[in-house]
Image 1: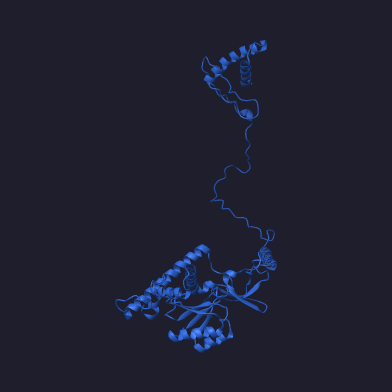
Image 2: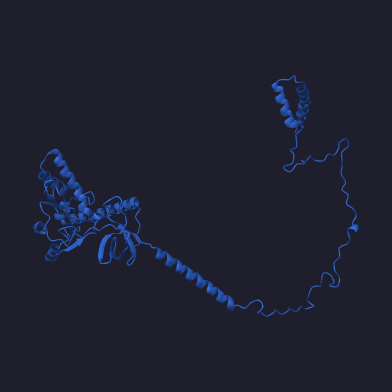
Length: 404
C-alpha cells in the first residue's frame, strides 16, 4: 500500500545520514515529505548533542513538524532522543528495521546527493560549493512527482535561485498548485506500485497473529542457512510490518522476511483429524443402517386383487402350453440361382491361410501375369541349362517369388 501524501507542508519530515565521507564527516539530511524540500548539514559526529543543535536551528526557522521519521540507528534509538521528541512535541516514527524502502523519500534524495559528491571529486571542485549549488537548483526545479518546485509548495515563492518572477502567487493559485501536486503524487505512487507488484510478483501476506514462522537470517558466510531453523511466533501484525517473538527475544521486520513454518507434528495432527472424521462418518452410516429395517423384517406385500369383469382376456388358455411344431413339417427351402448361358459360376477366391483374404487381381494385371508366366517358364528352363546371365537369374527369382 503506497504511503499517502501528508496533508500540508512540513508536517512530516524524514531524517537520515549520508556517509561517512573520506574525511570522516557525515551529511545530515532532513527532507520534507510533502514539498520534497531538503536541508543538508555537514557534521563530524552523529552523537545526540550535535543532532539536537541542528534540529533546534531548523525547527526555529521553519517550525516543528507533527511527525519525524527516521531509521532505527543511533542516535535515533537512544533514550535522549525519545525525551527530546516529548519536549518538542513531535511524534517520532521509526521505520521497519532493515527495510530502507519505508523511508523511500529521503533515500531517493541520497542517490542524487551521492552523484553530486562524486562529480565534484572527479572534476576537482569544492564539495561544499557544489553542494550548495545543487540544493538551490533542486529546490527551484519542479519535482518529477509533484510537478511543482519544492520551495513553492513549502514557502509559496521561489527566490533562492535568483530566477526573477513576473508576478507573485495569489492564495487561489497556491491552492490550485497544492491540489495539482497531491493529484500528481497519488498517480505517480499508483503507477510505481503497479510496476513493483508486477516485477516482484507481490501478493497479499497470509501471516496472522499466533502463527509460527521462519525468519531470514543474516548470512555472514555462503555456507550459512538462509532461514533460521528455530521458528518464531507472530505477536503483532501492522500492515507489512510483522513483530515476532522467540522466548524473551522480540524482532520486527518486513513481511518479506518471513515464511510459514510447518512441522511433522502439524501434518500428523491433520492426518489424525482426517482419520477421526472418517471414523465418525463410518459410525454414523452404520447407525443409520441399523435403524432401517432389513429385508427379512419387512412385512410381505399383500397380493393385488384383480377384477375379472374389467380385466382383459388372456392371450391363450392357461391350461394349454405352447409347443412348437417339429422341423419335419416345414418344407425345405430352395433358392433358385440364375446362371447366364455360356458362363460358369465360380466361388470367390479366399485364402486358406489365417489372416487377410486374398486381394482380387484386376483383369489387366492377370494378362500381364500370364505373359510373364510364359516368359518365366522360359527363363527357368534357361536357368536349368546354365546359359543365362546374372540379370536373368535375378528375374527368375523375382518371378518365382511373385508366383508363390
